[in-house]
Image (cartoon, rainbow, N blue to C red; front, top):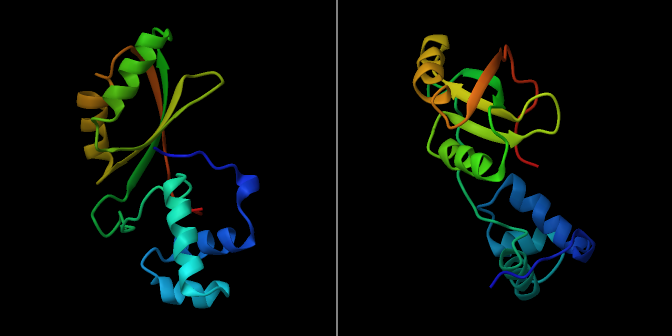
Length: 156
């Protein structure tokens, strides 16, 4: 069972742990303890509590998409033909099945969703748009904006 933790419950040591792990999730507990100024046991207990309460949701490798041949980024506004809960849930489930969609955000505004789509190039994007994005449930229209350069990307 995961216990919820409010940001007010995070003291300066917890925040220091999160800063260190956000930049290097492979830091050993001994090194983490040294860097935040606590001994190993309380540091380890704090990390475990942060994991159990869902503040730390996991650890993963950060990949360079450009070196993986995925340099093309497009942001796609999506308008749905139906915004009732069942339609939203169907769209949300389907988005999870499209690997090229890196991010999906429901928007309060002039459209319903904003997608970040990453592909190899514009030709690959066109294929993804035609075969996958346009086929998502309840899509009425889309507008695409191609990113020319990423000025800032990364973890918190």
